[in-house]
Amino acid sequence: MTMPAEKISDFNTFRAGNLESLDARTADRIRRRHSALGAHTALFYSSPLTLVSGEGVWLVAEDGRRYLDAYNNVPSVGHCHPVVVKAMSAQAALLNTHTRYLFDVLYDYSERLLATYPSELSNIVFTSTGSESNDLALRIAERSTGNSGVIVTEYAYHGNTKAVSEVSPSSGAEFLGAHVRLVPAPRGAGAATGERFAAHVRTAIRELERDGFGVSALLVDTIFSSDGVFGDPAGFLAPAVAAVRAAGGLFIADEVQPGFGRTGAMWGFARHGLTPDIAVMGKPMGNGYPMAGVVLRPELLDRFGAEYGYFNTFGGGPVAAAVGMAVLDVIEDEGLVENARSVGAYLKQCISQVVQGVDIVREVRGAGLFIGVEFNETRPQRATTMAVIEGLKSRGVLIGAAGRLCDTIKIRPPLCFERQHADLFAGALEDTLKELCS
View 1 (cartoon, rainbow, N blue to C red):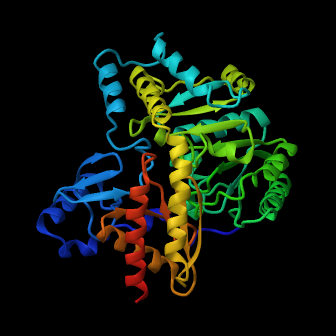
View 2: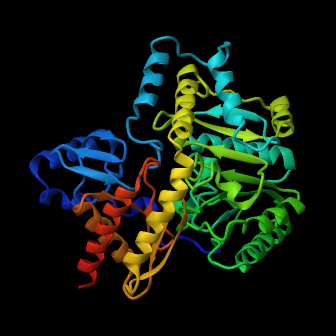
View 3: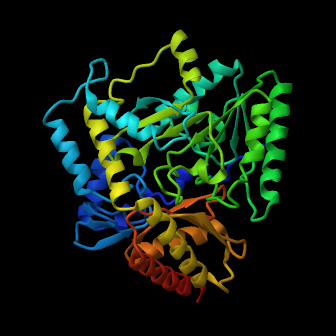
């Protein structure tokens, strides 16, 4: 079993030892933060940013500098989108309560959201976070199959409840559950990618059966974002899913990051020609408003609900439903799924041109507006990734990191990202790599 070389939460994090190098105002804010929130609350960058506003693909710092946001998928349709803000404030001024009362906005939203899924997935349970959704999905899978074994990729992240931390190896080896088996991320570009991944899954199935856990579920983020972003060839997931189902398990598609058009398809699993048994949604669902959900086959929910039931105080409330509807409106009205596909392809092409012949770059990969650039072993990957992240920040561009070795930069902008923004990003990356390699 391969374990992460480093927790992703420990990467690109401000270190308290750097406090004296900062301006007095920033240093004071960090002291206050640590005093109230604890010394281990994470901050990005060696010199953290103080942000005051956001609009579309831009974030504005206290000093007035604008930063091109190529990282944050939570505001999926753009920071502070006026359609979403209007829907949120209007519904909050009218009614906000829990779902043990009747109100039409929830059913209007549910029906519209479910219409984007395959017809077999016709029930939805609302929660407030992706962690809650994955936690619930695991409980339903265990109840449905009678098994507890879960298969995940070797650097996956699925949330931060106790149960979900146990299937999130990127959170650290100390959290991993005995009922969990890790498989390598599906690296490759050819037709054999799917069979290689399935072979690892079959091995994990045999281990779980041997150890008495059986197979409850294969749980994957369908763009494998924490593992380093693996999206191609489309369709490679099918053999592994077939193997899990043959062993009596379910396929849970974690769509928290790839969902809502991110990969150029409404749902990441759709690129693989699959219908999951359960799909999990989170962050982008509310464009920053805390809402999430689980979509599943009705017989799975009936079986679970008859024995356990489920209620989430904030899940599916009127404001959440109104916000969710507004997000779907924007995705449809602004053509953001197609934008992710076309602009994402252009961005990937631009990046590929920039890195051509750059020996520290191993590979550019991804789908839609979710792209990873992996660095090779000509120098420590962690140092390279950090240098690129900081170099881009100094040029007004924000990105993140991924991969078991923290060897990949993760490019994941709001879905309203346009070609002009791709050009800005590519120019900043080119300058950063030239400086790094000089």
